[in-house]
Length: 144
Picture 1 (cartoon, one colour):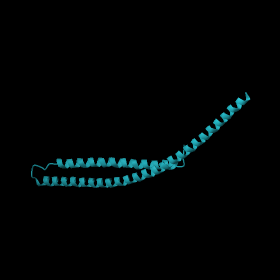
Picture 2: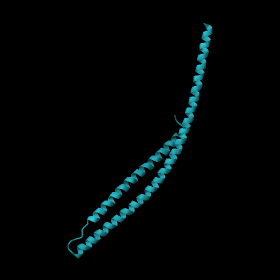
Picture 3: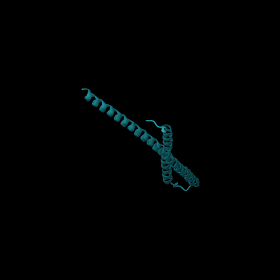
Picture 4: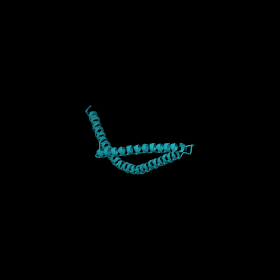
């Protein structure tokens, strides 16, 4: 059965699905970024200072550590932005879920009303048929 809320319900469901896909996407991006940061930190911890005290090598080592730390900081900043984005998407998801549930409730209530109306009509029809059959049975007794 269709109700007047079918079109709205479909739109709200599509919106909910779209936000849900965004949430899944940002969660996977966050997971990848966390893994990337972990890998960068492992690479940094695996860096070894040169054994020979050549000034150029020490400067190059210091520069490579500095670059690695900067890269880790940039990635952590991106991760923080992703976290705030996830919070925003979570809020939108909750709002979309509430809107969907409201429309779905109205849709189900209207379906219940239609179903109750059909049941009453069916009961009325059954009563009419029963009455007709009763009168037919009574009329055939007297004719015999």
